[in-house]
Amino acid sequence: MKKINLKTDKFVVIGAGDTGRSIIAYLKYNGSNILRVLDTRDNPPKIANLDVIGGILNYENIKDATTVIISPGVSIYEPVLQKALSSGIKVIGDIELFAQAIIDWKSKIIGITGSNGKTTVTSLTGYLCEKAGYKTLVAGNIGTPVLEAWLEIEKNKTYPDVIVLELSSFQLETLYSLNYDSSIVLNISEDHLDRYRDLLEYAYVKAHVFNNSQCQILNTDDQLVMAMARHDLKKLYFAETNADFCLVKIDGKTYLQIFGENVLLADDLQLVGKHNYLNVLSSFALLYGAGLLDNTIINLAKSFAGLEHRMQKVAEINGVLYIEDSKGTNVGAVIAGVGGIDRPIHLILGGDGKGQDFYPLRQLVIDKCKSVAVIGQDANLISNVLSGIENVVNFTTLPEAVRFVINNAKSGDAVILSPACASWDMFDNYKHRAQVFVDSIYEILK
Image (tube, rainbow, N blue to C red):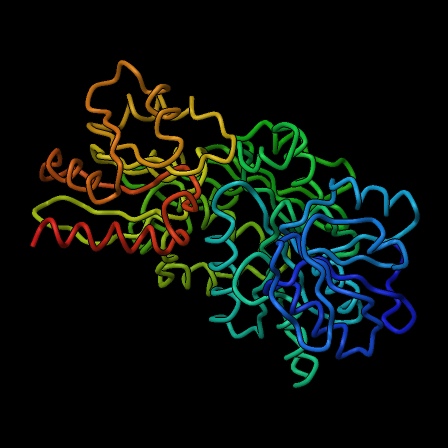
């Protein structure tokens, strides 16, 4: 990727949301020439002193640019953008701008992607670095847009020791110049198939996180991830068993093991479930690969309480454990999270499935679930996959679904909202869905 010249390039920005605004602020700070802003919405937000052109993307609006900067919600596979690329116009995202801006920083850089668990691993890795005393920036597909964080750093001249980036496939489509000390693809399962032609194309984009990496972390339990191994890179492996970073059971207790040494008792962690133990191991592997792991950091993992809306304990009432996993928006996340809970389960599924194949849920339900409530626009697709299994019922609303699973649950069971779907069909967002779930529990049990 040819270096962007902030003074002489002519920029078109696509996207007027949070990321787009952070791009615009960055360009203005650097005195760049912004020709115009485009947005695919018919009535886009207004931006002071700039024209925002809404609606279907038109090549006429970008042909005079030297660089087009797109928000993650805009696919590089859009025909207009493909035409721009073939015409010699650079098409990049905000992370690429950031990567070129920090080329002289001495920070350790850690890159994290995968279908499931990346937000937990990113947050945990950043938490461990901060608690260990490193100045740490956690950004990317999490929290503050990366260029907004960059502006604060530049203004204050307080450069981070460690940069931990969560990277979505959308961001990786337009990222070329980031040099990682260590990077990881946690796993691959069906997601965003409304954007990609198939699972292999999605996996191919995820593998971009290993470009320019000093050390790649690979999941030996995932064949698609293992296919990403590169002969010229240092490699570390994590898995449930038999890997550099793995789990081991001794006398009924689970330990986290590094290179054959038991370093942590799983029961000492605040995180619950086998998938979370693997998330901790992934973080340890990333830090080891970047030359940062020590016993202090390993022990700090005990104090990490996890993330909101990811397999989060809501309450335990009358012996029934209530878990909210509203960010479990694809099939792989549900299988990983729900599959790691050692209780009989009453599960709530459904929403906008984003073109996924729900069939892998069938075996999970057979193995783990005593009842299943299904909601949302893809309820019939899910219930058809689960046909013939007892106690699978469709409901019109989430409160009705909650009432059903609570009525079925007994002491020692778990009630879990882990929908395998996006929330947009019924709720403002996944947080709104979570709140309705929690409110319904307390309303029904009051």
